[in-house]
Structure formats: C-alpha cells, structure tokens
Length: 363
Image (cartoon, rainbow, N blue to C red):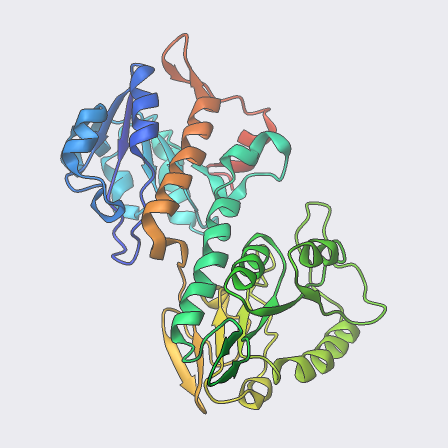
C-alpha cells in the first residue's frame, strides 16, 4: 500500500502531516511512503533525512496517481482529477459545503476523512487534531501578543523602582484558552478569564487564573463539551461585565468559537477604544469572523494605539512542533483504518469515529 503526502498550495501553511518518527513506524509496516521534494523543509526536516527514514521522493503528479492514501492539510479541487479511483484522502479539515468536490468524490469512489469532525470520545483523543493544534495556538497567541506589547510582562523589583506585571484577560477557556492562561502565568502575567461554560471555572482557577463570570449565569455547554449560543439576556449581562473588565487589561486573548457557526462578536468597538494605548487584543477567531471589533484575518490592525492581532493559523507559526503533533494524530488514525493482515484500507462505517469523519457525495 502506498501513502503519499503533498505540499499545501497555501504559502502561509507551514505544517506537514509526517514526521521522521511516524515515517519510521509506517515503514516498519511495509508501507511505501511518497513525498514531494522539499516536503519537510518548513519543519526543519531535509529530504535526505526523510529518505533515510524510509521515504521515496516523487513528483506531485505521480504521488496523486499512485497513492492509496493521500495526506494533506486541505484539499484542492484540481487534485481530485488526478487521483486514482478508490483512493483515500486524510485531511486536517474539510468544508462540507463544498458540493462540487463531494460530487467528484462520489464519481471516482474516493473517500475523504476529515479529522476536524472527530467525536469527543476517549478512543479519538490520540487522533484529536483540533486539541493538539489549539493547544499550540493558545501558547503562540501569548508569545505573539507579548512580542507586540512594548512593556515587560512580569513584575520586576529593581533599584530604579518596581515594574508592575501585565494584565491578561482570556476570553474562552477551551483548549486554546487554558493553554493561553498557563503560558501567560508562566511569563509572570496577572491572568483572568471568562467562559460561558460553568465547568471551566475550576479549570481556570487550577491554572492560577481568576474566573470572571455573570452572576446567576446559565450553563451554555453542549453534551459534547462545546460552547453553545447564549440567550439575548445573557449577552446583555455579559457585555456589561466585559465593558468594566476590558478597559483594565493590557492583553486580551480571544478564543471563543461555536462549532459550525460564525464566531460570536464579544469585544465591541466601544470596548476596544476604552483600552489604554499600547494594549493588545489577539483574536484567535479571526478566520471565523472574529471575537473582536476591528479584527481582520492575517493582519495586525492598530486603532487608537491598540493593536488587534488577527493571525488565522497560529499553530503554523510554530510549524515544527505543530507538525510533530499532527503527524502523531494522523498516524493513530491510519492505524485505525489500516488492515495489517491484508495490507489494505478497511473502513468500518459502523465505527463511531469513521461515521463522524467520513465525507462522501451524499453529505
């Protein structure tokens, strides 16, 4: 069986889905692994290191034509034309609304597995790309914000006087938000956080953060552990609380997302402009519409001396670490669908994981 991995067409995407460790594991299973020239360079892996680990360097066209399994962050429409019938594509993410691609898949009997739809169950944790990458995004958001912040972050006692610590406010205490809290605390910041899920209070406080919440708040958590949309009454109460909280902060990290919907607008124009010049807002939801006013995808916007960071792929900004984690997630998924006895892909459509991630022309 042949596994192929291709470059991403998006130049801003630096991550890859293979590591030297996972290549060696796949090679031990007698799998042939094809990659394009220069595949690992953005993650500091040379072609020679890949070859020494068991990879064969091929042209992208041959990889598409020969491979039984294709690994990619995202799929380009033109790539489907070259794929052989019956191929399998394992992706980081896929847009279910892309009906043209789904029609072509059905015509060529091609399976797409999009791991961003993994269910939140114990068996799927080792394949959970959203968590592994959100963790890194939370970390990197604090690093990028601290870089743009032109003051010291920790308290410093000097002969010339005391430097007060930076105040961080984290909006959303999911995987990214909790890592942002932990990173900001390690840097010496004073950290507070908010979330619509009551269960997050204990998690925030366990990391040394102060939990900011609306009195008599409703629990806005789905059965799957994600946030759900708030009522209008809750939104009004939250806005009043945030108005008072935001203007006192130095750095705000926004991580609030609702699966399948536009990101909730939490920081209004009025709130942004109430902050001190030199303050930073880092919006991890910029690609989904943004949690903050003035946020623009892949830009740093400055308003009244306040910087709003809108990078859309924080994990890619630390591509080597991100790629290593992604590669482990991908390897664990391949291990689920690979029939070692018959050396082929075996798809159990009754498996809860497979049912969740398998895209097809009937979606």
